[in-house]
Structure formats: C-alpha cells, structure tokens
Length: 238
Ligand SMILES: [Zn+2]
Image (cartoon, rainbow, N blue to C red):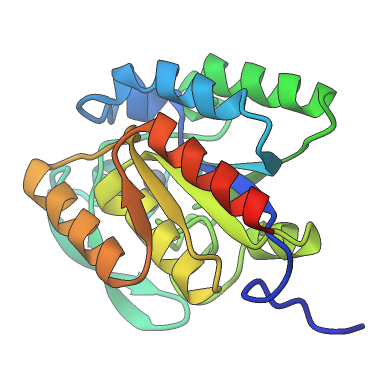
C-alpha cells in the first residue's frame, strides 16, 4: 500500500472539535466565554466542506491523577510533580474534578451531538475520540492518550479517511486546543484554528498560545465565516 502523504494528496478537510463538553462550558471547569460557542460551532457543523468530523472528549475515572481531590493537601490550579508510568515523574497542573466518565459533565454539548447526527445523515463520517481514560496519566492533545507515550485513534481515523487538513475549534485554547493543534502540525495536517469557536482558561496564556500556534505553522483566523471561506478556496483549488 503506498504511504498516504497529506502534503501532496488532494485536499480533504476534517472538522476537529476539542472537548466541547458540559464541564468545560457550564460545569465544574467552565471556561470563560465557552457559553458563546454554540452559534459558531453550529455554523461549522452544518457546513458541507468537511469529509469527516472528529470530536475529542476528556473522559476521566473518578480518581484521576489530574484532579486536585486525588492529592490530599493540594488545591486546584496548583502544579505538582506526579509519578508517570513511562517517564518517572511529570509536572501536572491540578484541576477541579471534571469530565468523569458516565456523568453529564463528560457529555458533549447538545449542539455538537445534534450537529454530528445531522452530518452523519448527510453521509459525513463522525468519530469520537476519548482521552485521559487511564487514571495514571493526563492528556491534553486529542492525538495522544498518555502525554507523548501512546497514540489515540485520532490520527489513524484522519489518515484512514485521507484527510489532508483540519479545522480545529473547542476548549480550552491554552490547554487541549493548543496541544491538539501542535500535534496536528507535527502530523503535517496544516491546521486552521478559528478563534470565534474557541475559548481559553486564562487571557494571557491564551494570547501566548495563539502566538505559539502561528509560529508552529498553524493558520489562525478570527471568524467562522473567514475560516469556511478559506476551506472552500482550498477545496476549489484541489
Ligand atoms: Zn481532563
């Protein structure tokens, strides 16, 4: 089988939504501004430009390593050195309990569920990828399940569908969106990030992340309209 090369193959776009889950929007770890994402996300999900839609979900056991409640005497938003099965020890930011498997907080927002169902009816392949499922390791990127150690099924799903580029949106810009975009750059998927459909935890960290993503080769645009025009132009050129 010849190798698939996203740099030279005909253009095919996937929409990649990062962690659009209740806990990050209106739950235990609500990201400021995430409540204004429904309109932009719905606009993206109803676009006919995407061959595939992927949604990542943070999906933790109740005693996950990233929860402050797992570490007696420590508070949310502190950083702590924690043991890592493959690396000895890693620096982990602690969070309030969030996205525990089986809870409402771990569910995708209704707008995403519905948008994916409707897209599936139009014949678009929809893929859900879970991360953070192992209690011992955290993962911000949708491409990996255990820091840089294990891959999630995301890259295989994208390359299996001959996707060459990804439009990325979701939460949080300065954590899971950032890590997912950086990995998409490494995989040669030339990500396009649309800020109107993203929200960040901290203002300064978010601005820093946006600069970092541009420097890593991601294209960053403000509005969904501008992003969809870019996708359309790219598809027409193909
Ligand atoms: Zn998490």
